[in-house]
Image (cartoon, rainbow, N blue to C red; front, side):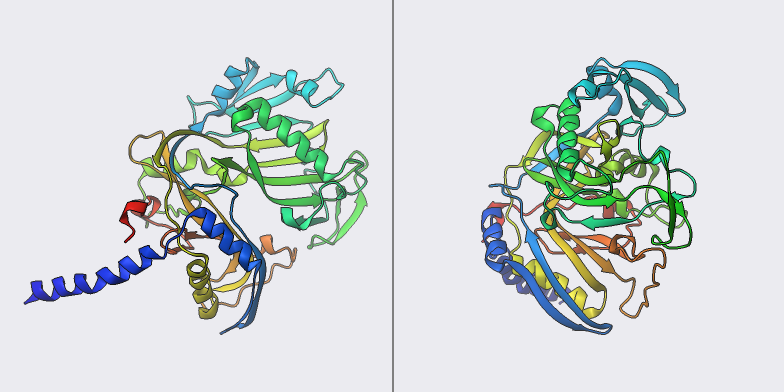
Length: 411
């Protein structure tokens, strides 16, 4: 009798799964849905009051969404391929001198940029850093700055200037393009800006908030541009590495092997350039190289289904505000090899996400910038199933992606 009940239950599920699959669309159709919507504009009643959403929905201009296997581009390999001169080993890292890059940036100095990367004999991290008289080093201690944040669609890079800086944001973008092309090659330099922070000149910290600033620092003559950016692979931004959601304590069930594999590419979501001018900047990158296509293209859930999944979290009281919704890739470990990862499509939603519907979120008295809110999070909405990943992952299996839905399975 139990077997009959179980069989009947499975049969009941089949039409639901078939209907869900039949509604799936190509990325071109999905982009058309986003263009037809224009903006997601809606006000919702929630247990914590009204939540108003008014944002564009961003879909990359690509014709397919492949599932990819990738590997990390190790910093030491880049330095050696460029023939850079090793200057010293420093702790777990290696320092190199790069004279050539300054000429490409039109810097008329005899100095060299400093390249820093991990020493693979000491630590297995994929980051690559380049700096010349970096701005941060000049404001260490009791110095701070005022700043404003922007999404790329909110600014004109030709007309946006940092304090006392005669170069606009576009100059920083041009320098970023030169740096990425130099170190990763023209075929791998593609990127998308996540957000821009326009920072003022360094000033004496005079109180507890970002606005409590005193005298200017004399040897810090102008403001800077902080560009947070994401590598694009096959035209699709790689936004996050799933290990950023990983919780490792003595109470969790994540093995050291999996934790270290995730840690190797943790810098995926912190790619950045801070740029004062061509004589003062720092670039931090973690880059991936494509190895193989697992699937040439996969179907995606409709935009309505994605928004419905988020609306449920809004109406339940978890999501308190939404700032951006963008389709991209998430990087997951792949068990085919210790060095291989896999990229799967997902929606990245920048939002304030509470631990519970009743949580009273503590105010950050230092700044009102939403990225500094104690509950700001980039939550992940699976682009095929619309399952939402928020909060922490505390076991190995949560860090691996299930097999993707493919076109042949749609009925």
